[in-house]
Length: 441
Image 1 (tube, rainbow, N blue to C red):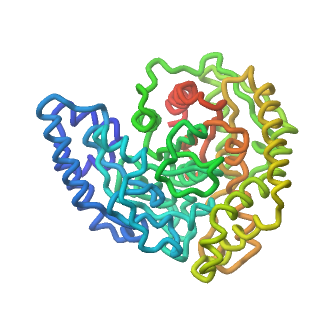
Image 2 (cartoon, rainbow, N blue to C red; image 1 turned 90 degrees about the vertical axis):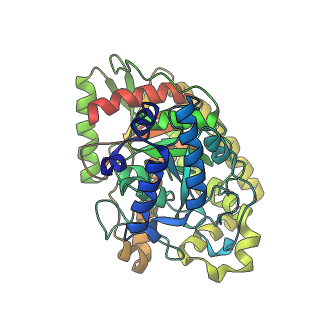
Image 3 (cartoon, rainbow, N blue to C red; image 1 turned 120 degrees about the vertical axis):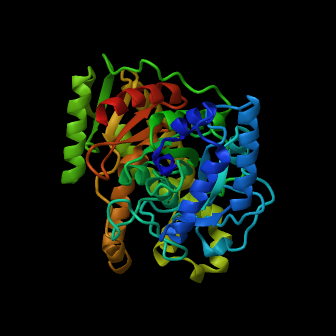
């Protein structure tokens, strides 16, 4: 039974289908592991034991009657604390939303529940999802799997920790500027950023509605594909015989080259491994990406502050000062600045699409840096600003360009390998990721 906690979500599902695992016993094993873990309260904001047990019993009955709803029927999952969950607090890591209890599940949670997954509970996150570091002194800062003194990455910090510490086989997070891929990279997981609009954001506490996306963090590409299929209502992509033979990838500079030593070495090693498997690479810069990056402060901060201004300014003292400052920076831009920025971004996206059309994917180190030190982030303002911006630099390329993307673990701890594909190309992306996963692990 102990080995169940180390298995992928898909493998657990196969064993349930083969009558080797009882969903009730599986759920109890996770609930027991959560209850016994010393960092439980740093990872989970709420544990939905009654709901989990009821859903597991229903899954067990379906398994016995031969009416399972899919591969992940009966498999537990954790949910980031910005997905509405009926009757359970959903506070998005913020004291501003303390006591907020929705009456309905978010669309993606409802879809996942219909497919038979078991909701273990809600996981901690960066405050209102507006940081890639995972540091949250207001509620909780989850642990990094490799370094107790480092941050775990965010904003889906507890989501990553729940899987990395064997307290869930699958976690659902969100990604606005890198919030799935960063914590996945820093905790050696697979993290899928879906294309904007591919999965419903109904019932998801917003940060920037024009960028917010939903995505899984998990142990393998198959798990990401199966979870994506459940939440999108589509059949899972066929990952069999996935190959890198003759695949063409664009290495985007300076985002691939201007990185610190460990992520840079891990990226070059990954390129070498993929090249031996038949992949081909070209390097290029993109003036359109560079231009889009200059627009990021307007596009993200202005929308975030416009969304939350009234709530924030009613009680600003409830916020972590650095997150408050980041929101308030959105007030520096006018409505005309924001409209013009989106017009320029649309032009940059079109040009980038043309530049990359001949390639199967764009590849980058997921982050240019390793997880920063938690205590120094709290005591050193300049360090916080530098590390937060650097952490999100590469992942933000995908959000700005409207890409879908995936971070894959490499043999080097906390060094992810990222692949970006055009909007709505998740099926292609997942096949490429499956082929790359086989080479990198």
